[in-house]
Image 1 (cartoon, rainbow, N blue to C red):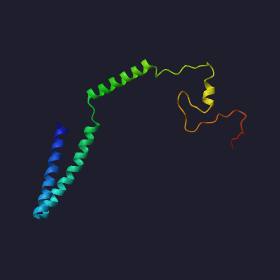
Image 2 (cartoon, rainbow, N blue to C red):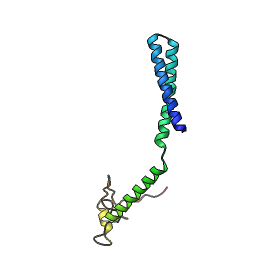
Image 3 (spheres, rainbow, N blue to C red):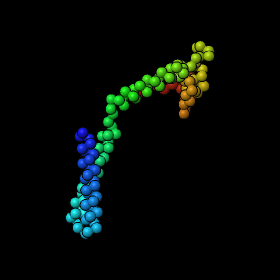
Image 4 (cartoon, one colour):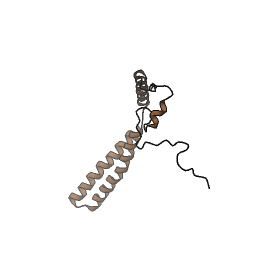
Length: 127
């Protein structure tokens, strides 16, 4: 109820403000024009606050629908086998694929990292 009242109040302020501003400009009444412009400017932040409040409000039904949709999607992924890790063609040799510059599975890193061996390059000492 309060949200509806805020929306109606801000829309009425905007309508009265634009009407008053237009009336003041047409009939050359500067005070009416200034008052109308001030009311229209006052309605702007109220409309913005109201629309933000409405956009961020989530009802219990929407929350339950989102939860159920996520649960169904997870079940579908499990049924398709998308969540299972890929089978290793040669057990114990999974690191060889990663050393070739590729990441795990189908992930290809932007900059493949070179694996350094223990005897690779000079060693730095802490100072």
